[in-house]
Image 1 (cartoon, rainbow, N blue to C red):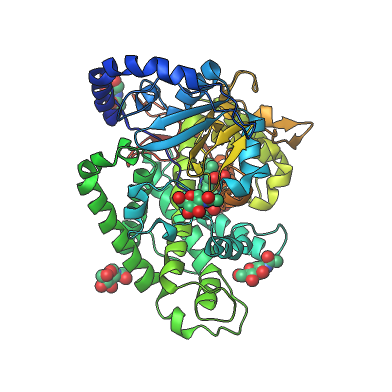
Image 2: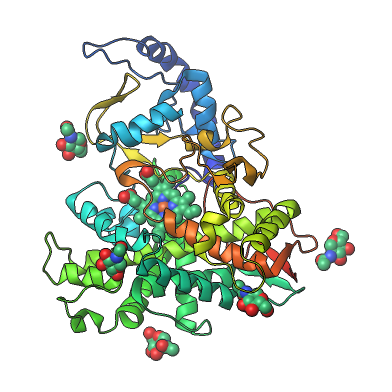
Length: 503
Ligand code: HEM
Ligand SMILES: *[C@@H]1O[C@H](CO)[C@@H](O)[C@H](O)[C@H]1NC(C)=O
Ligand SMILES: *[C@@H]1O[C@H](CO)[C@@H](O)[C@H](O)[C@H]1NC(C)=O
Ligand SMILES: *[C@@H]1O[C@H](CO)[C@@H](O)[C@H](O)[C@H]1NC(C)=O
Ligand SMILES: *[C@@H]1O[C@H](CO)[C@@H](O)[C@H](O)[C@H]1NC(C)=O
Ligand SMILES: *[C@@H]1O[C@H](CO)[C@@H](O)[C@H](O)[C@H]1NC(C)=O
């Protein structure tokens, strides 16, 4: 649920100034770097090409001037070749462009590139240890256990009991959300969507449900959203640790919010279940699987603290789905034709006598394709990987410890791979009445560190979108602009107001 950008606009400006001041030094290094780029060493591997570098910041200045850093990666790929070596501050990086090379990194050599960057910020956000985090930890037996344990819950198989219980949770969540909509009135959608997504997640993973007027619950939802926004921001300080002091206050705030979330989870979600659970019985939800693992039985078992972090990470997935859905509505407000086509599909497949449910997905490819199309256009990055050993991609040497940026921005947005990539056209994902996913479309990464939540995204987004459009058409509010920010899943707190017209 946590994606990552590189540099925020303010820090970019700061960097541009610094880099201008330092640019003169670059000239003398120029000739030296150029000589190195294409030597073939004894192991037969090529050194990846690398642009001219500036002292201290290395190549960070090359990330400036783009809406998302991944556009810089595409530019560098065109200029230097698919594999480009960069020094970003004190961090050794390689940019990987192209479907074939990205697949090599994710799948063929996935076990060489299964670590995550060791940014100080990640350590601080997770109680001083990034290994507490599902998304930012390195690969380990613990991570394997955590992922295995999650599977049954985040990937419920169609037509099992677990699936139908999620189906009814999504339906009732959607019904409660739509019941808060006052037709014709200006609606702040984000808080409504986030709360109901949170309840869907809490009931699915922990069998807990809260009243939307419960203040502790509302605060918890807001706290998650704020942290979600924060981890989706990129900091130059990730690459230039001497800038970390500038972020101290903000990180202290994040720690306070994380602490409050922990208290809510312990007091109001877990409550007495840790002690009360009968570990011999089948687990009824993810929380019970975690407790069972901690209290023994299976090996290797997790410490309770680690389990709580994992639980919070997964509950936090509701922020990803909620923010994503708000973006879907912001796309649709400008696409009345797409809305009409979804509504036509709903009317044909479901009719007006019952509500859309996630069981309708296989028969509603256009609605599903709309979810894909929104994910494509948001172009959120694959969380950076790190090499755990010396390796190579496409014959280019990758040293142990190198951070890999896999440029899926290009895979989602290139005009070589998509017709009219800038347009919102769900039909690109439908062939002969069926949903198709092109092989180069990798919004959830792949291999052993792939997204654990993509099925939840698809199911919850489909259910809520279908339920809303069955009863409403989304309309713009006067003077509101609906430019959906790309390159990150997060949205600022009060983005986008809408009007909903009853159909
Ligand atoms: C539209 C929403 C989402 C997008 C686009 C997305 C995308 C991604 C991507 C690209 C990665 C990195 C994959 C890789 O390195 O190969 C990732 C990792 C992850 N995602 Fe998602 N995600 C979304 C929502 C969610 C949700 C809702 C959850 C939780 C229920 C979730 C849980 C995770 C976890 C736990 C990881 C880390 C896995 C690991 O490092 O082993 N994601 N996601
Ligand atoms: C749509 O409206 C109908 C009729 O008022 C209602 O029964 C149904 O619950 C609504 N659907 C959702 C998802 O709220
Ligand atoms: C909210 O949290 C406070 C302090 O953590 C607690 O005393 C109170 O009972 C909670 N309120 C509800 C409605 O659970
Ligand atoms: C259903 O969920 C439970 C945990 O709640 C899990 O133990 C079980 O394996 C799941 N069943 C299937 C068919 O996935
Ligand atoms: C790669 O680097 C890490 C961290 O520096 C080190 O612990 C590990 O042993 C190295 N792996 C290999 C195969 O050299
Ligand atoms: C929208 O902007 C126009 C012109 O700037 C202004 O006259 C109008 O009152 C605004 N409408 C709303 C609802 O704010």
